[in-house]
Image (cartoon, rainbow, N blue to C red; front, side, top):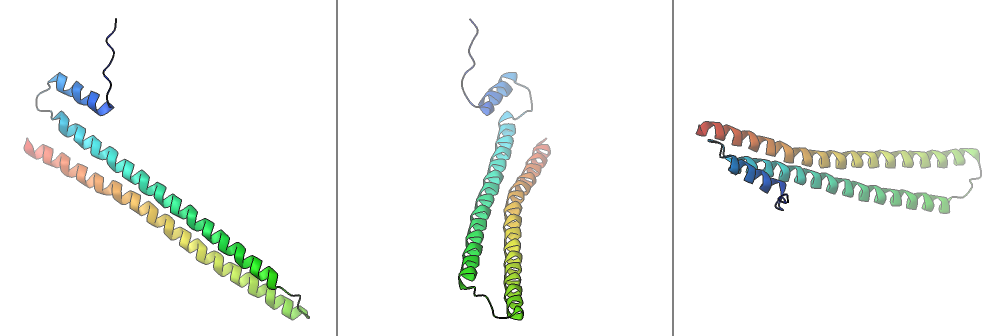
Length: 142
């Protein structure tokens, strides 16, 4: 009967494998710790990205609701003007307000996307710097 593998995480299995090899001058625990930190950084970056996407969707929903409310208010208050100049002025005003609102919303959405992306990248950039320092410190020990 074949021996069943022990249950445990991949990191535990890798650690046991490295210790069983008994390779000189290799700190298996340091390697595992290094990769564990990498995985934690990736997880934090993914969470930050998901939180950013969630807040973006929430804000876009609010913007849509605001726009629909404004259009409804304008439609309810709309009265056919007596002459073509007044009609043209009302249509121009509606178009101007719609355009300004769209520009404002687009700018806000772009800023939310930028912040979300920057946060995720900063988490990964910080981990890369830490990893380089860990590697440098490992070589300095030798």
